Length: 174
Picture 1 (cartoon, helix red, strand yellow):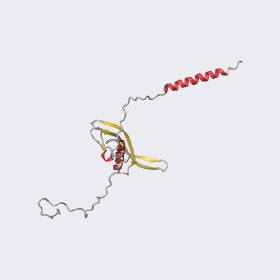
Picture 2 (cartoon, helix red, strand yellow):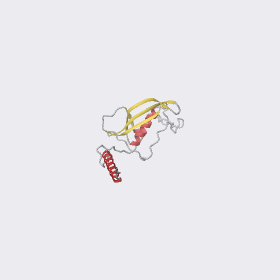
Picture 3 (cartoon, rainbow, N blue to C red):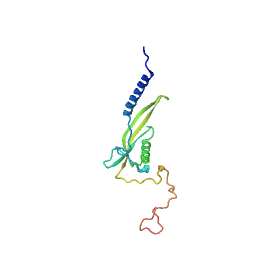
Picture 4 (cartoon, helix red, strand yellow):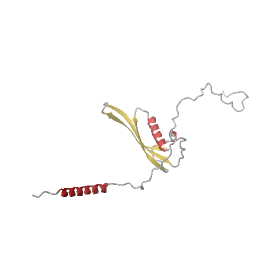
């Protein structure tokens, strides 16, 4: 009986490797420099106070900038979740966020064996073309939300109201 030569196995090995490389190479996809899909435009960040939260897509022209998902515990006020959506939209330069989905659900943690009520908001960030929104002066710093603190002047220190028209000189409006 004749022993097969080592070269036969080597040729078979090379042929199989070439076949595998051609098969896998045929499945590979190389992205070209050109894209047929529309490029998402970029806008500078804006103030969160100027972002509108709407329930439907507007009938006017707009650019879609992306989607965001905000998930919080449902014990937090809904306004806080909406504020998070506004802040994310403002960072992306969107002047409106279309609320696509809002759900509350129970999430079970298998480690702590506790369930938590959660709220999930999914919003589409858009830049309406019919609304002009000024960019932030410093795009790297989002302005803080205004605090509900009282005005620096108390009612005692406030100046008296102006006198009504036709009142004698020195009279005040009180």
